[in-house]
Length: 88
View 1 (cartoon, rainbow, N blue to C red):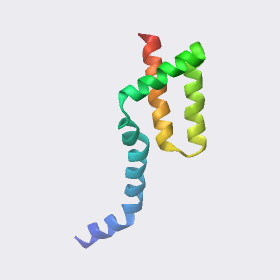
View 2 (cartoon, rainbow, N blue to C red; view 1 turned 90 degrees about the horizontal axis):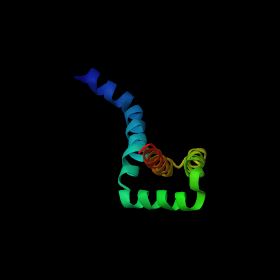
View 3 (cartoon, rainbow, N blue to C red; view 1 turned 90 degrees about the vertical axis):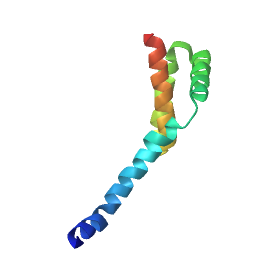
View 4 (cartoon, rainbow, N blue to C red; view 1 turned 45 degrees about the vertical axis):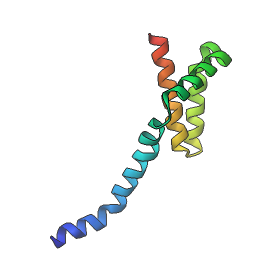
């Protein structure tokens, strides 16, 4: 029992970092309503036409460079929606 407790204490920073990253990069961007993502996609298509996917990639890269994981996740959703629309 004590060995498990020591293992838990020593690995908790690793698990905490992992859970924080999952929350910021994966879960929190999914809480943004689909209507807002669709609105961003429609606006990008209206402003940039066929280069909308490239612009979404630039914004995602900018968020990555500024360590803004939530914005990076949002722009990833926008980029995937653009790809889905282009394919379908």
